[in-house]
Length: 292
Figure 1 (cartoon, one colour):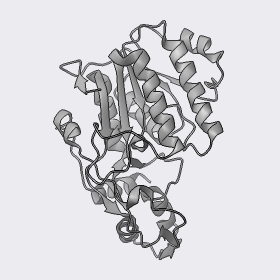
Figure 2: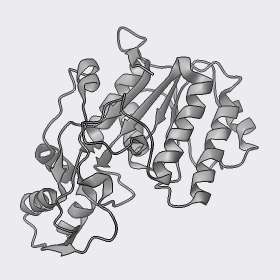
Figure 3: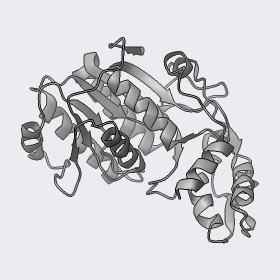
Figure 4: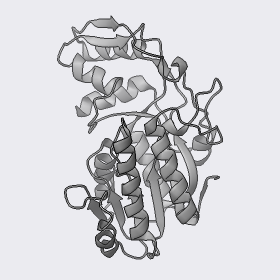
């Protein structure tokens, strides 16, 4: 599935329906859409249980012709078969609610976990054979959505995300900053040598907004093309926060994720989003700390 813009210029959508309201992507996307005075409808688990098949009828009544639907709703990270099945139930409800609606655009927020571990840089054409339930879930949902909505579907595959509004406190910048600001020890696995790409939430949301306004169709990786070790990140954050935190090395249990190296080829991103500047992780962490 290639990537393209259907609109030559950025056009304000009539309404954006966001399925999933509590995560870091959704919360930040909502804020930016509101600042741009774009009408939004939020559908969260507190109002609708998307795992329930009967919910599709209720959701269908809320969806209007020409809506842009951003599908973020996920039980994540997927740790067991029950969570895997629940996420497929959510996808089923979304598909059933949209099948008789002529929506304008569907944006699905997936994950880079769909890709196989490879030595070379990962691109949108890389092999998708996930080695985790989380990656398998996203790939399965992608395939279901492509079969039903291929002509209006945009699939975005972000790598590790950091920034204000994080709800997972995952290993990396988010957790390290939380600990550093409290002067608590920062634990890194092994020597912290694993190198990964981390994308700042503000940058990610800027891309999502443009995808909505230019009605992007196809698949796109959301990454920076820059990789850093977790040891470097821990030291950088301690330095930027002037923290008294100490770095503690803990024994790694099991295999190092992605063989310790997961770089991305962001040629496609640079081609279509030339005006969106990718800053260094140091500058972005400084921005994050200003908002903390």
